[in-house]
Length: 412
Image 1 (tube, rainbow, N blue to C red):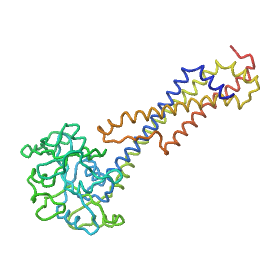
Image 2 (cartoon, helix red, strand yellow):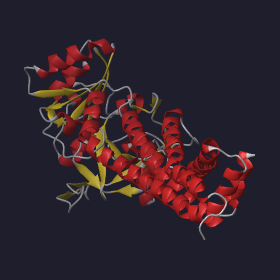
Image 3 (cartoon, one colour):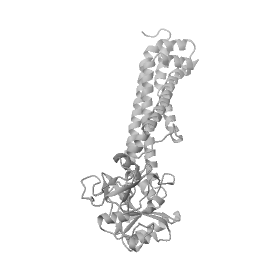
Image 4 (cartoon, helix red, strand yellow):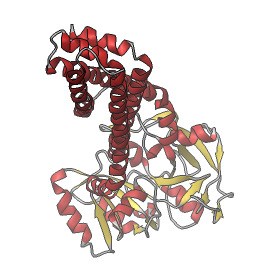
């Protein structure tokens, strides 16, 4: 009987009920959307440093080293000598190494000089290797491999000619290497990481266009005297045993050859999140504020509707309905409206994810989730349902008192 009364009551107030449902749905979209975006950004950043144990660079700030070596979001520090790279490559604790040299750009996209180890050992996501979508990896000093976003945005493919420039990451180019054009040899498959935003050339090519190195061709998989560039900006290391990370970090921090910084990517990533925690909390506070507004709309709408329901409630009281029944009707309506808003919000967010996922991947290299509702989000939805139900307590108490005072002759 009570559910029929609740549904019949809501049916007589379709417009106001629909507005309440819409307000709750949009507030839940904000709450879950911000939480999902935060979680996905964390996951995407973490996937970029998958399997990487240490990053070695010239002495500098750990966060800055992480940002420029992995995410290409900052200016690199001074380089480290090739003799140091040789020392790292030959170290008994090191399983693999990836040298990185930066500084050039092409139409705003960073150029990364490296060797074959990059394709062989770089991992993202859950230990996923890099793959070529088309073409082949570097086979000569005049070839360049493109990240998927670079190829898509600039319309390049295998065989295209590319001219690099020094110092054109966000301003005018300092030096344009027009006398050393490159030919696109391949395009990497999309990864959803900063890898998609880069152009990749050999260390040999980087030295040739700057006339600063001595190489033998082709660029080898391991360092040798005849293949020694002047310097590189960073070296990514994978160790044979992860238990050796802290020991090698301390050893390299005290390296006699030159001042070095050895950072643990995962640790520095957590430090970065702590630095941005205030921004995340502000976004959460904004979404909670929107939900509180939705609750106020719910309470005010129910209170405003009570004046037109005084006779209805008086009849219920005359039929023997007690406090529990009156509370059940009003709180039940609030629960139904909140439940409808939650279901609508989850469905709206899921549809938005499906529609925006390709755009987010191509524009931001951000993989949006494809699930309807995650387990970690259930407490949030439950809290919204509980808050929406409790929002009916005040109108329910007022309705009960009105029904006692009115009897069967409520005020007109």
